[in-house]
Each structure stands twice: as structure tokens, then as C-alpha cells.
Image 1: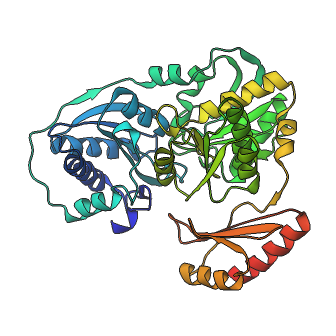
Image 2: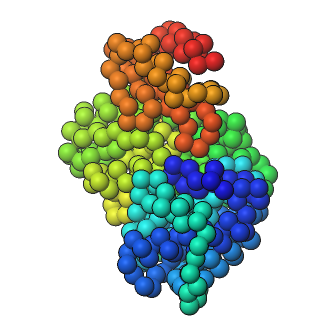
Image 3: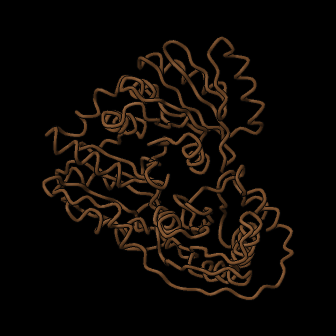
Length: 442
């Protein structure tokens, strides 16, 4: 059970690592932690779940665990993670747990935990304490709490939708048979929406709910080309990540989307802070500074990122893997906020997305390359010595910048891997540096 606790959430396979007993104990541990943290005798905790095959039995036990420790439950049922965060913050509840394994394959499940105002819980802000309470498994009997069911999706849809007419813009949205499809029809009703794989099926029969893997966007690309659509959008298994494809069916990397968003937001909000993770290309920082904003780098991980946004009071931010966050009003993932900005640009500019993004394509990037390495920290130390002439940043792993290229290596927070990204000013430099680093890491 120790291994299910990651840096910013809790995740494992069902039923080997996460099962009904785990869920029951997790509910109890969270209530004990929250009572200690808030000194409140009575708590209201929001619970929601994705549609994995294991989620319903796990959810019953998670709820039973929360109730058995004397807290009240607000049961919002099937829900995306942003919907759960919204529900906690919008209605002023004490905390929440999303039962989900996000983009992982169907045999996984897990828990994403937030405090009041949807403040994130990571290893730095409470996950270690929850782990200690969970592993100790020494709970006092309490008078059971009360459970109520609450439908919050209508308010979430109203909060996100744009009443402007985008019906002439044809968009294909792939929600991978996951809960991410639930709010799509309501929020995007004023667009030329073509919704694929919107039927809920927790076995994810069409493809894994991870749009960051290119093979999981093949069917979306085919549909974009068939429909002659203006763009495509792929959501992950719990709806907190969005990946964009242009009218040619080509993936637009999330750091380019972030750069575009920064240019749009900063025109109306000069001097605002824009957060980016350390994996993002140089175009992000350059764009933010070009439009008189303040670019702030963060370590990788949605919980760390949201915490940093709060600390810095950043207006907007984005991670390389497709998490985008709006600081107004709740500092939560806001994929539809980004989508409507892009629809607005397409409508105003009367140009395809590939042309709108083109000015931001100044550099050449490898994408994220994974290596299985036994001694991850040792290997990173060797790289630090080998490339000591570069400008080093160690916010998360090791990033080394040179005048015409840079690389980042970091140990995965969730898997036994080292992840590498290389960016360069020319394809030749990129090929050469990727070759050198690949040889070294293998």
C-alpha cells in the first residue's frame, strides 16, 4: 500500500494495489487529516468518481469511510475532476476527493484530493500526513455523517459555456468513452460540435484515455480530415487535460497553445503572471515577456502547479501535458476556457489554426522521451557534471540551457523512468543532441 502514494496523488492497479479496503481506509484517513488541519468538528466533503469499471464499488467504500469518521458527504456521482474541484470551491465545502486514475489504462484507479477552495493536496501540502494516518490504521469510532446527492454539473456548464455563436466552426471532440464527455454537449452547444466516443464505457474500448500519446489521437485525426473540421480536441480520462489538433489533424503541443494563450490574455491584462512548467519550450517565456507579462517556472505536477499559481497569484498557467489553469476565480484546470479562446481567435482571424500557431513555431523539439534507468538520481548527477558549462536549473530534475539548445532530464513522479526533452534552434542540432543524450541514457 505504501507504493500507491505518489508525489501529487494516489494511484495503483485494481484490485492488487487499490481495492475496497483501501478506499474505505482512505475516506477515514482524509477526514482525520482534515479535522486536524481545520479544527472543525463537522465537515462537508464532496465525492465524485470517473466511470472506470472499478470506480463504483470503490466509491461506495470511499463514501462509507468518510461517513464512518463523522463527516457529511456531498455525492456528485459521475464527474470530471475539474467538476469536482469546481463543486468544492463554488459551494464552499471543506474538501473533496475525486476517485479517478486520470489518463491511466482501465486496470488503474486512484484518488485526487483537495482542501477547501479546491486547494491542492500534494506531498508538500498534506499527502505525507494522510499517508501516515492511512498506514497507521488506528481510527476512533465517530457518530456517522449524513450523505446527500447533489447535481452540480448544470452550474459547471453555465460557468464554462460561452453564449457567442461559434456554429460555423466545426470541432471534433474525443472524450475516449470517459466522464470527460459529460459536460461537453452542454458547454459546446453553440459550436459546430462533432462528439466522438462520448458514450461512457469504463473499459475504454476505442483507445486509452491518454491524449498525450500520439497513438491515442489517430482516430481523432481521421475524423478531423473526414469532416474537414477546423480543429480537434482530445480530453483525458478525468477531463482535466486537453490536447489540440489543427485542421490537418496534427497535434499542437501544449506549450505552443500556452504561448498563444499568453499573447491573448496579456493584451488585456499587461503585467499579469503566467505560469509554465519547466518542460515548456523557450517560446513560452519569450512570448510572455514580449507581451509585458511575468513568466514564472514551476515544477511538474498538477498539485504543485496549482499551489504555485496560488502563491504567485498567477492569472493563467499551463503544463506541457495539457493541463491549463485559470487563476480566476478558483485556480483549477480550465480546459474550456482555453478552447473558447481558440474558437474566438479562429472566428476573428478567419485563418486555420495551423497558420495562427505558425509564428510560435520558432524551435524544434524532441517531445518527451522515456528511458528505464536503475539509478535515476545517479544518472542525473553524471549529466550535471558532463554538461556543467551550461546554465543549470534544478526546479524539477535538471534543465541545462545553452545558446542554441537545451535539455531537461527528470525522474518520473509516477513511474520508474527518466524523462528527457530536448529543444534546439535547428533540426540538425536537435538530432545531434538527442543522439548524444540517448546514447548516454541507454
